[in-house]
Length: 286
Image (cartoon, rainbow, N blue to C red; front, top):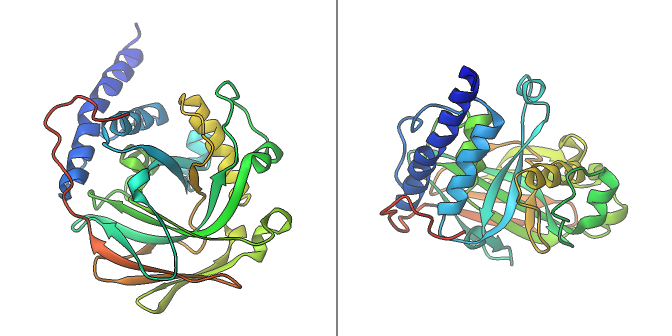
């Protein structure tokens, strides 16, 4: 075995230790002053850490967030999207009243206006390549929504996309709002959105700010998840990317997501609370 191969195997084995550190920090709502070990050097290593963390997390996988891989990293890794898991208990539905959302004190927290796709069908496990048209056909509905981006590691955005991938994709919640009327025949440029933090505008844009639009995010996620042996399932919620930007937010603040002709989503940000401890390295629930 070549030296490079030996290093890769060693790095993948170490994914277990880093995943346990991220899971424990989140369950205990404790900040991480430093990255817990060596930072990942390849997409395979970053997703190996994430996959191990998913296997340890005591909840059911119910969706995925899609984020941007910005230049110059997109050329390095040959793609401009990354994925992170969203679990059942992290998904809320906006129904007029403010939705309680949670960010980690001492870590990183942000609010993002999103277009949320619900999966209309199971993705065939053996299908590895997807066209934009095929992704459109498998989408069940499109909704206004919000992603709560948060990590116990305050520096998660300072070291490139591999670090983001390794810590649950920097996700800590999803809020699903009203279905977008006429989405099948509309253009992403028609969906004009605005994000407010404590009543002040933090960002304004339409969904064409997502390169290729929300369906392109779904297309790439279909390929990413299939390559990992985690094909998307009917009913999953897919957060397709920050429309107006990533807006830093902390516990105690409020946020609103607005879109023309849609019901406003109101958020109330609270500090994440300890959930449990992780006594061993054994999986809690797949």
